[in-house]
Amino acid sequence: MYDSSGINVSVPPSGPGCVECSADGGWWFHLRRCAECGHIGCCDNSPGQHATGHEQSTGHPVIRSYEPGEAWFWDYRTSSVFAGPELAPPLSHPLSQSVPGPAEKVPPGWQSELH
Image (cartoon, rainbow, N blue to C red):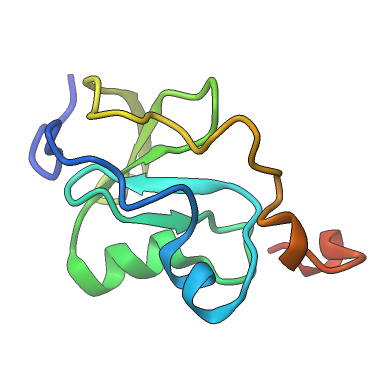
């Protein structure tokens, strides 16, 4: 069983990519969705680590993968993965979107910039 606080199944995602990376011209490796407000941020392997930054600045405790074919949730309070409820669509970034992305922002040798 999981703690449903911090999960709002009716809120759609904020968009197809990391909000902060999109705003500052950056790039991401994988994407995570805040289960409370729908904010899309980049994973902790990404240079910006914006999903965790969002949790730290808002206190929103749960994220869900925003990658196609992945449905796992992560609870920052317990540092654990769990299966949760279906969220409002879309459930992932578009299949046509590159990983890492966005394609035009990913630098050569991007692997060396991962955390």
